[in-house]
Structure formats: C-alpha cells, structure tokens
Image (cartoon, rainbow, N blue to C red; front, side):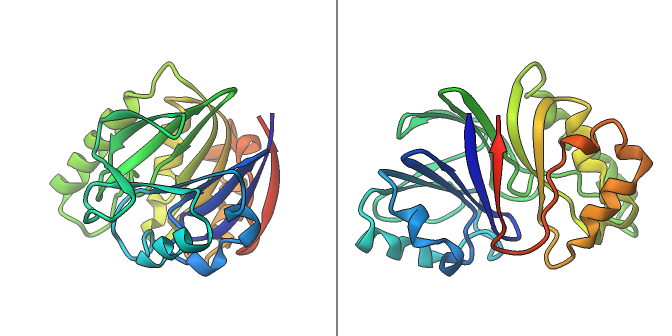
Length: 230
C-alpha cells in the first residue's frame, strides 16, 4: 500500500490514502491543504487540548467540507459534530478501528487499524525525563511510559508518529528507543521537536539508534510531503 504523509508542524500530519485523508493534531489549520480536505472521507484526530496540538479553528472546515469528521480526546470540551474518546477505549470511527492509550502528559495516543494498514500517533505519550526534576517523578514517568507501551506488544504497526524532543537533553531518544524495542514498527516519523530539525540528524548519528535508524523517516521542513510504502 502507498500513502502520502505531509508534515504540518510540531505533531501535526496529513496522511492521504486514495479517497481518504487522516489529519492528526492540526494546531495550525491553515497549514492543511485544501486538497487533503476535499477527499471523500476526511477524519481529524486530536490527541489533547494543548495549544501546540489543538486549535478550535479546525471546526471551520465543516462549512466548506461537510464530509470532515472529528475524533477528539475527552479533555477537549464537547464540540458540535465531533465525537470524543478517553484513554484505553476502543471504538469504530468512520470505518476505522480506533484504540487509545493513556498519555503520560494529557489526553490520548491513537492506534488506528485500517484495511491493510495500522497507524499509531503518540500525541504527548512519551518518556518525559527532565534533568533537575524530582527523581521520584522521573522514576514514575519511566514506569508509566513503559507500562503503557507494553500494551502494544505483539502488534505490527506500519507507521508510527513518535515524539523526539530535544528539550529532554540526554533523554531525547528514550521514548522512541523504548517504543521500538517493545513494538514491531516498519516506519517511524519523528515529531514534537518544534523548529529544531537537527535533532533528527542527531538520532541518525546516535549509536543507540543503530538497530533501527533505517526505519526512521527524516523530516527537513514544515509542509514536506513524503511518499510511504507500507
């Protein structure tokens, strides 16, 4: 199967299949191309309410594109025409089997099972380890992240969108590293690095990533559109 992925910004992506678009965490609605919103089916997934993941401006799309449907984390207030989902729930949404994990920050991560393709978008579910933070907090974060990701063990994921946050310093890679040593994933696209695209080059050179760096799809600019075979 072939699909196109367009990077919007931060954790925002459009994933285009023939006749269908999936949009994840589009906090910059103006970055989503009209082409993507004009497909027969358009499904928008918002992992939580933080301003770098969610903008109320996305609901304006319904006026020009009535086929757009929304699935929102339940920390976002109810919106007309939108469905909401909480952590560790499973529903069928517009023909997609959707399961969620509990974020280690706020909201949910999405696991989507479509015919012939399984996608994962982490939202802010990550191994957040901050130097200078209370050691007990960091230990709890490690435990919580590993326990949540373990729920995916045994699955095969075609494409995963995972945080790679340079603000974490030496721990910048721990989330992706733990995920890829726990879950079978064919391709990974990093996200949540702000404007610092250099963190992707850092991963590509990091000896810790040697066993999986060939599965990481590099990003170079906002708006970049990449063809992916899964």
